[in-house]
Length: 162
Image (tube, rainbow, N blue to C red; front, side, top):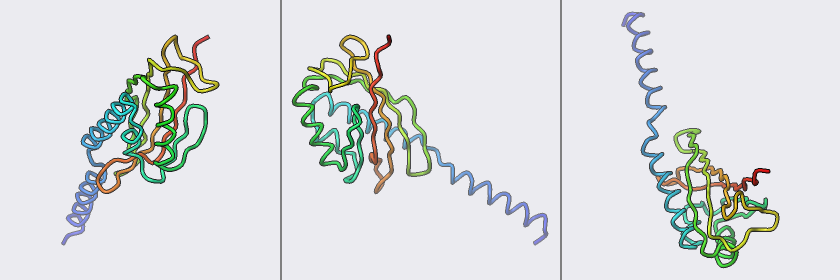
């Protein structure tokens, strides 16, 4: 094989490999957006088990007051408690603000949560606007056994404008 043909073959194989390495994430994005939608529906039913169903068993979650919860079970217990008290009857609207793939199986997902109809707010948290709590949630998600799962989440409340 000539040197030029060999070099051309290497270039073509490199381009094919690069194209495969940068897979189209359209299906992944749809799956992640569906996960967020299902989680939002679970919040609106105040169903802590369903809300945490897509967390991996040893996930971490930091709530809006900075408390760290470790493990899906602990995250579910905390959400069951708030669904029975301050967020009982609340309604959430969640928008995916930004979605970045860090590789084939890892994504960072930024969402905006708008919560209304709540009974109260955690100590130190104020409504962003009268009757509205807006938070920014950042998720780290990973594909596990073909399904997108939440590895970590951190929720931060938006402060009211002065």
